Length: 521
Image (tube, rainbow, N blue to C red; front, side, top):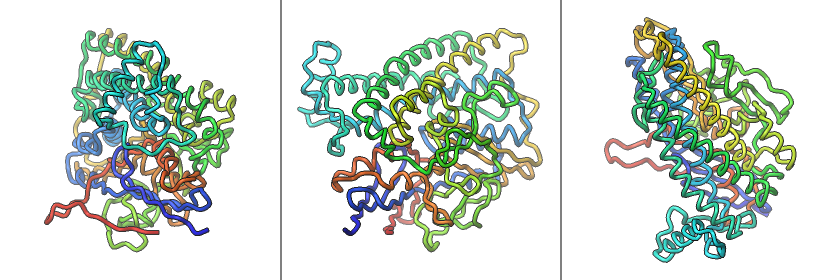
């Protein structure tokens, strides 16, 4: 039987623009090619400028991930400037970022992914007496009657893995609406210390600019307690209900599993030495979860064999550049292929949690015989949201105590001026995975700047050795019994929480049109 090609372009309900081409043979994916159709040129914008501009320029990569780019950039600048962020500054940075994670993960589950697993129209069959759920039912049915069901539709057709129990579906839709309210509060929490959101204005080299009042801190703490209650009693419970119930066959089959290589830079240090990490660092190879290897930044290189860039093969981010070559033979994407010791690595919540191995997640994996894949990524994301939220409570209480000390500081003012030369890397674990910014300073200016973002690791193209990137590998074997309804393909893609928005459209300066390319296998 000859292969049938399916092209999905654009992938919806993700951040940014992404295209995928898969070949189907005997009802499963036999070949895959993910294509990043946007060009990211932000690195070139900061070269030759005041290095301190980088935190504000690079966070314009995205309206969702802006804070984390600002933070990664500040960490790189801290290293290049020799700055030592005081404890108070570290706590405030962590609280700004932590709130953005509380915003991101529930959004990803309820508003970007859950619709892949719900037969939403089953809500019409709800017969219960819960006044709140009947209100949700009436609201949705009115939208259906008005032919105004976006963003619930359009969608792929429900399959055998979709939840159609009216009670469960109505509850899930009610939580979908509640999650919108919690996201707004999470953004407000971050803005208390960040000045505004998106595109914060507080995190700078050496620390932060805000000197908070106790009233602000207690306002933040009050909303944090609401977030903890929501992620514990609603978000995690929904993920477990679905993952160990209707979706258990997908979870046990490991649909959407990648190479079995997982990486975490580690992040959110509680001490100046960087040893007390919330997210531990490490490397797992070939699905051997029993052995976590130490991570080394020196083993990161970028392969651009199939990307539209001019460069030498296998350079480190300190050496890399961002020069386009649209005529390059065999290139098909703007996404580079970062590799760790030459190997593709999956990054993100599943990678972090497999490196960290928290008991609550490992017990579920063992009890239900769940394999790494699309469903496991959702479980890992929910578990780490709770870990982060509870750590944030410790951070905010530590901040209150720190503010009462006479030497309370938020910034290393001794290292604000630009050094003549220096270099540094800011590596951090963010919602979508391992994020790194690299900077070189020469003659008091930015001489080179590179960003390796989480979706670059996950959505990397085939490298010069012919090895698939993590997402392409995840696609091989994914069941697609109906080529007209490739719902499992988008389930796997969305499980990575892709963010291709760390890029810009390539615009023709004469016509102002977005460039289009026809690409085939």
